Image 1: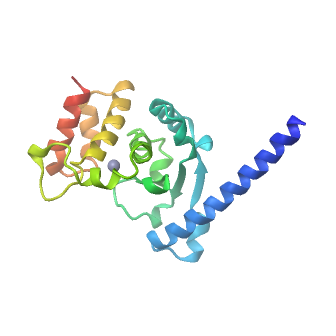
Image 2: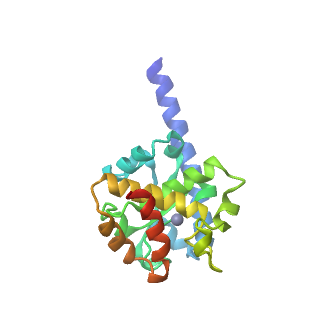
Length: 198
Ligand SMILES: [Zn+2]
């Protein structure tokens, strides 16, 4: 009886996943300006199917709600963010990775960062956009609210805490960030790092 019940639940789960996958691909077709023929090359993964390094980051965030986040691996030729390897669509509870980066096992812990965006959204869905516009450090506020905003303070803090726990020094974290961000943003990152490496 139990076996039968589990079997039916699994079928139901698979069906739900397929429905979600169709919705996600429809959304990404417009968002990434893809051709119909590109859609088959997007890989949609459930969190339970993620490789070990990603599981470790989910475990670090310690939030059961994140198991329902959908992870999409995007082939390099369809990627749109240049050297930045990942992004989140928090209101959809979806995270995107560039394929080449995804396969490197995420040494920079961008999964932690993107999952933290989803977490922040779940905590305060109505406040999320406002917090994206609110400077984290008013004393360095400029006309641009990225990355100096309340949401990015949260997400970069989680990412840096994870890397610190993995044994990375402050300098190693900064060197890693410098590969993907311009010098004008270093003042923000240093302020976040001040909080983590006390
Ligand atoms: Zn972010």
